[in-house]
Length: 127
Image (tube, rainbow, N blue to C red; front, side, top):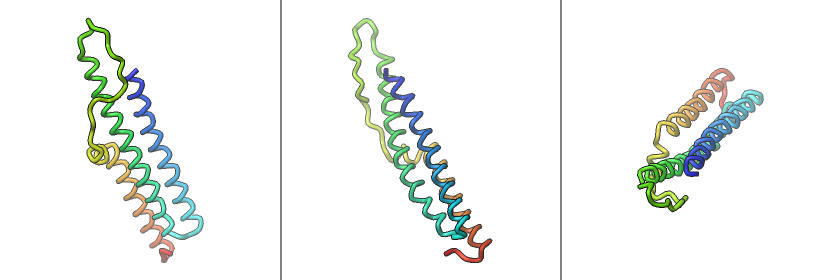
């Protein structure tokens, strides 16, 4: 049961990334259509929000992984408790700064800034 919770949380994190790329691409397309590069910066808001949400999912996933390891190491001669509460608290900051969050959403933020600059120079204006 605990393993399924870990799998669902990992799947939710992947889904967060997919939604974020979709929304960001739509904002970039809107900015290109309207020839307003500054609109690309609007994509930074959903990127930030999805990064925060994805970090929370990763934090929960880590705590359930620890719980799974604790259950796995228990003596099996006694009946397990089937407790689904994660036993260890994990740090939100470490989840937010992990490579799977910081690298992905950081690269997407840098891409938004680069696209804004490129479109601004191409159109000769940013507003």
